[in-house]
Image (cartoon, rainbow, N blue to C red; front, side):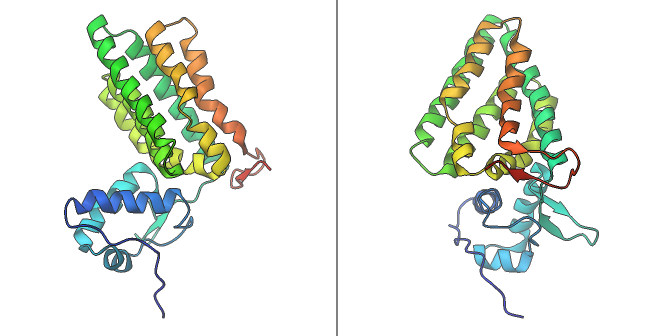
Length: 232
């Protein structure tokens, strides 16, 4: 049987695991690797020019992020999204990030100043990424939300958030490039920083809206949890 190239670039020698992770994650999120595709170790390791051991480390991280899943025979595949998965992931995300925002907003003054500075830096990185590829903008968006969870100081919260980060990435891209750019745009994230800075009574309501409004870009058919489609 003929082996087909997946179009992955060969990697540089230093920090191979991280490079492999970035390359594989981008291939999955941007659709180069289709949902359900078998992540064959021999082929991927050969194309990336790395050992199977290094590849396995990267694949293990993808599985932890929810981008890859194991079938009944122990083979790893690119995750396939369905309506229930997307809806559930975003509801969990909203709960986690709302708690993170409130916790950060209630930090002692000096810690809160530091937290706000880190969020501002993450927002600036988002602005810079807007002149680059859509994937760069998406990753900057993910890093902003990761920063929000991290500066809350709640390690369990951050770990829980990391476990759904892959599904979140795939879901945003599933809505199409135009809607994805809108959802990861820097200006709409200024509100998150303002909420942490001001600590208003309605913080939970506004954070939930910030996260869950993205679901409006999907038609999540209540009658068929296995169907996921974008709006025209």
